[in-house]
Image (tube, rainbow, N blue to C red; front, side, top):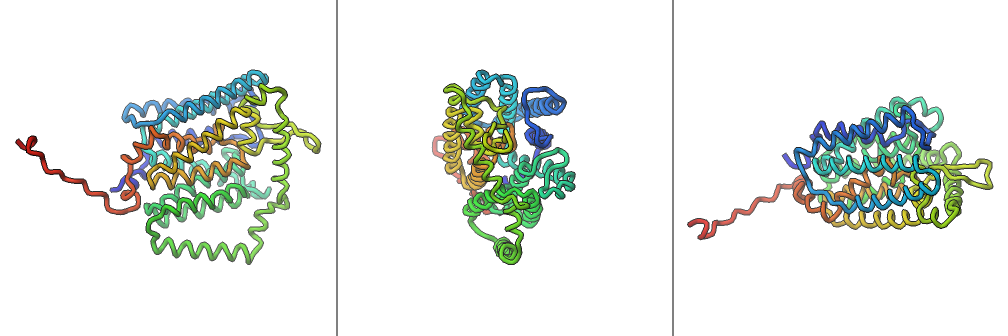
Length: 415
């Protein structure tokens, strides 16, 4: 049995821990932002995060795989800057709590990567996203009457539900690209894409295209069934685009059209003048700042719908510089990973980084941060060495494993 197929058998401990991580990083109440007050939802999510950390720590007694520490130093710099900003902006409690949540999430991911292989980790992540996203979608079918599918339990917003579905699509697409999955994975992709469509998340669907294309470029041999399926899908998509108004309705989304993009520009412009002094300009106001005051509109405040604008407000110019260098560093490391891992890592990075331009949450306790952090940890120089040992390219692509060389014993040993 190949290593790729062995990774499909997800250890129970890892799956339980990943379910807890995804559950605690999605929103349980739509339209509600944490401002420092302790309530049952905040307490429950905090308790489950600690349970996940304990479960991950207990698993490290079995194995101790190599994981680099450079990512943690970068994350530590971001969190320290955010706490300094929250301290001077009067949001220390709220900003500190969010920073602690991110720290617990990061420690849990590190412990899991020390115990399980990269493929086991992302298989568990995709499975957890499928389970939680599937339950949320089924229990939230009544929200379709409002025009966009949202979660019922948990009450995730449409964009987060689309994010969970896209992570499932990317993992299933990677398996098809590597030749380790077929019709079953294709069916999963169809269902997940259907969820994305009904959520009306244009950014998620837009960023899926280049991410999947990058994965496809790593394919060595395209199977006949895959080629035929791709051609039929392309033909159906062409008919849907030019023969119906489905695409136009999706882009306009009940007549909203570019209004949501224009409203983002209003918040982005307000973010450039948000800081009251040089300290706030440098360090921001803390990770708890999710809404910004706006002027000249009939509304007075607006969410920060961009991870990079959020970083500017939450962590200041220092945060923007560190986060930008972090993203470039992760991309550089992904290009140097083995072929099979490179296909998965680049696809994930293109998706989450591209999505972060118009959606917030990349540098917070969210599912996209969970994926980004794991990729960043695995593509470090200190971690990449283990990837070659975990899985060879021939093994992933379905080819015959490389035969071990048999060396003749030297005369000194033979004697």
